Picture (cartoon, helix red, strand yellow):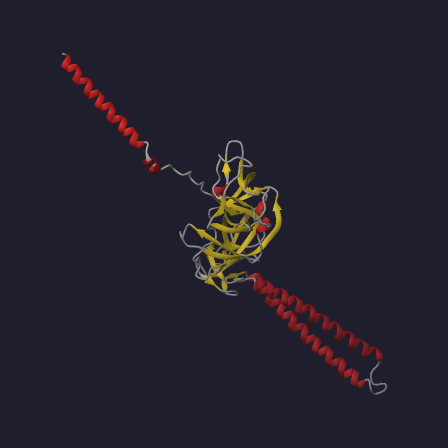
Length: 374
């Protein structure tokens, strides 16, 4: 028992001696090799300048295509349709004969007017010749009395007036008879033909239907209403693009040629017209179009990267850097384009703001910054 206890004490003493020796060795010159961590250098914040530009964007508006010219063809006189020379879908040229009408009373009136004109011309020719003979004879003293000469002159003058009246009557009758031939007022396409030969037609509401409807298709008008807020951005002769559902993915172009120069009170918009060439007649009157209208602000606006704007429940701001310190500037957001956002506030072009806003940065906090590469 005493032997075991002595053995245990000798082992414990050896262990303690070994530990003391190890600690002593650690306390010598080896302490010079202990590595301590250096403080981490703060990374600088990226900054960008505030830029000024005129914001241009595209305003999408609905519009409707219409013929450049269109008209309903009604008869000018009471008559019957004799022949039709055009039908629906036919292209026509200006002055082309579309229909012939018949009205016997107009033909008779023209013949009567022609006969009266010829009779008055013959009478005037005779009286004028008689007057000239008397005038030559009157050169011989006492051959012709002055009264007879005056009577002959008055007769010739009266007959000349009858000729003028007869000619006017004939021209009026000829014009009325000319209404029996209906011609196209302009080049276009017949889009409606409502009556057939034998139908009675006439002015004054005797028939409610036009004989033809003609529309010009090779040139169209695109009408649309521009909201009052964008009226100042619309300029004559600007090019405008638009699309129609009939040809998805295809863009057509036109030129702004007419402005109403008046805002309609009921819609608070201005009517504009865009001329659209349509040489192949692919577009049709009545089609709805989606117009991409470029609008530009009248004055320059300020833009910053979208990431620069910090939005919280209390405010919206950007972090401007002034003399190495943060300056939180309240702004209002506008339009976005290409990663840039329009801002309104106490900023000016050339101010430097953080490229990436941070809610943890406080006002007047010193910051290390560097200009970000674009």
